[in-house]
Length: 133
Picture 1 (spheres, helix red, strand yellow):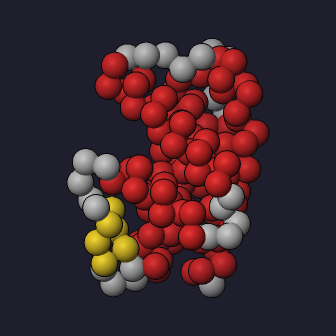
Picture 2 (picture 1 turned 90 degrees about the horizontal axis):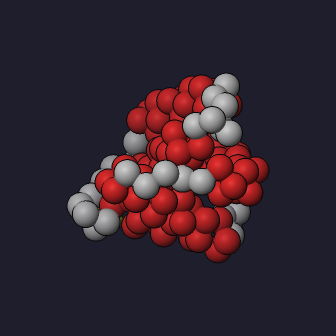
């Protein structure tokens, strides 16, 4: 469920900085050795950035489907095309299976999607930076 809150630029800025730190960390990881950990890290970065955007707009997702609703809410931004939402949700599902069922994320999946994850992250950061300035 998405609830209305007061917009919070400071918290969004803090989340943006944390996401950038995670991004620097994940870029130093060997994705062929640790594809699951790297993919989960990309998911965390995307989720954090999506959360920051919601905060800037004065919203917060809570409850069982909070992550899905957070991602789906990004469709209102013209910079975030439908394929990006689909890929974020696909990554969310893979991350959930990994976290809750112990299913590994294949190296091939990460190799094929990594550039797109980075593109999504860059897009989210640009939108946030535009809104906080």
